[in-house]
Image 1 (cartoon, one colour):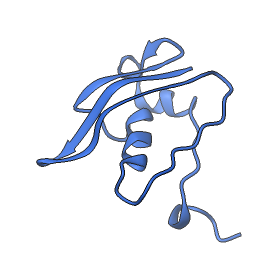
Image 2 (cartoon, one colour):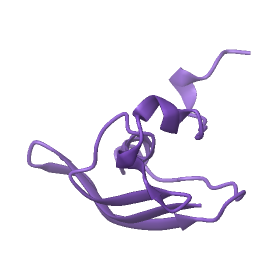
Image 3 (tube, rainbow, N blue to C red):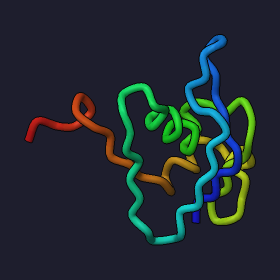
Length: 89
C-alpha cells in the first residue's frame, strides 16, 4: 500500500503539488490524470524519491520512504510515463 499524506512541493514560490493525500491499496492499478502542469509527474517523482517533498509523508507498506536508500525503494516501485519517455514501438 502507498499512503501519501499532505505532501507539497514548491519550485521557488510556485507550488507544483499542494497538500495532496492519497491511498493506493496493495495490488491496485492507479492512474494520475490531469492537465499539463497539474503535478502528476512531480507527485510520482516524490513517491520514488527522484525529488523530495517539502512537507508531508509518503509510506510504502507502512514504512516511511525516507528511511530506505532511494535505489532500494525504486526496485519496489514501477510506473509508466507518457509520450517522450516511451519507446516508439
